Length: 63
Image (tube, rainbow, N blue to C red):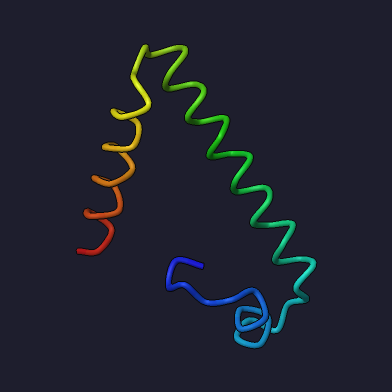
């Protein structure tokens, strides 16, 4: 999904069923939500700061 592929194209590329891919995406979304909640509640960050962290990490991963 990072390269903006559809679920069906990911299914063709990986050989895994689309239901499995959907479950994995759901798990990742749940983890991201929990992580955001932790950063906001525990560390006192604002949603904007959380977004900036995500953007920074994405930028680093490109290199």
